Length: 511
Image 1 (cartoon, rainbow, N blue to C red):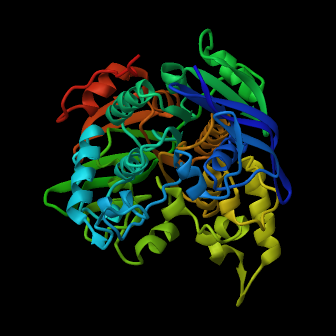
Image 2 (tube, rainbow, N blue to C red):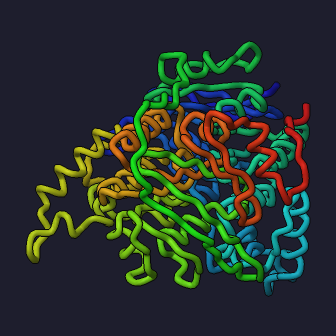
Image 3 (cartoon, rainbow, N blue to C red):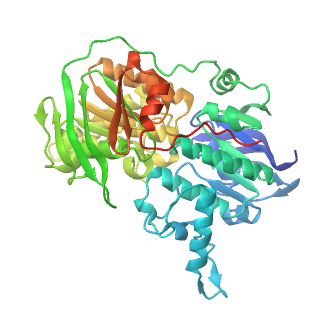
């Protein structure tokens, strides 16, 4: 296979950080080039360099054997390079079609925008991605998984010859992942060179043709996928062949700390997004909630945290009823904290320092009279940075300077600083590498052992089975299965989650 793009001696320096250290990288055309590494290893930095978002401090980029300088995304686009970023880059107040063609609008004779043509092309792209998303729908009204599909469609519309996919499946259901893999197979047969970044290592083994492993800005392994196994990937990433998420710590559960009864949330287009959901949680228990995209899991957690005052039903903390008074802040005061699915939009203020982001939900605890105790704030943040092993150069740096996984750990720290009785975790491992997952899940187990009740939403069966003390399955807004961990099986859980859905089969990427 031909090499379409190469980096030679690639070095990238940020203030206080050496993100890439003399990297040599080859991108093979007509192949899936898998890139893997822990958070902060340099993956996203290297892809931003290829996409023209960042420029190398030292080193060269060659396309088709000729040295080029990519001074911006327009330069990269002219060379046929497209990228789907891990953090979605969409305009929520614009339609799906407008987002897909932003900056490349279809026009009539160069005079006005041909909206009909853009809608038609958008429908064709959505058909290709096997999604029925309305071209005129506002992106801000879509769920995260649907927004991810729009991002992928935006890159497909550019007819890129080199396509970078940074965590493209992080918000997708298993069915949507199968569709994406079929699209990747089509692109590969058309000669497109694909860079695929994912923390879901099993995905890499399924679809990769070549693999490159980064650790601390240095390439520790680069080879064809033949003969590569999970142990080799993990060893190259973190120096040990271990995938120990979290071993259960034996401890007794306390009394009931939270209960929900007949919680309902009306859907904008009619029907119920959450349909009479009831569940209970004991102190020290981790309750896993599983379901396909659109099952109502995230919406239920939003009801619990108070984001939907029009939701109905009854909820109790320590046996005392929750009211809608005070909204989200009132629920936090009652001992409920939420780690949202979309950390960029719902969990962080990107331009603010790491320190200020971590304490946003607990300012009262560090206020003395009319003034904030900045010393206490720094000590608190330093403690949680150490506890969660957040990789930072300084707590005064903007949170946007961190890798995706470290940003997620800042969101987790922000929730824990409020000292909750009930911790709601919506896909807490989204965009987190294997090492970070082990750290986060270890903290979850420690918190549960200390008496914290945790409701844990995940679309990863392995995580669900490893962490949950009990399991609730949702489908179409309803609870369709309840399992004690000892009696649960992956087959039964998947069957319960598919109630009301068409059966699906595992999709492999076409050869």
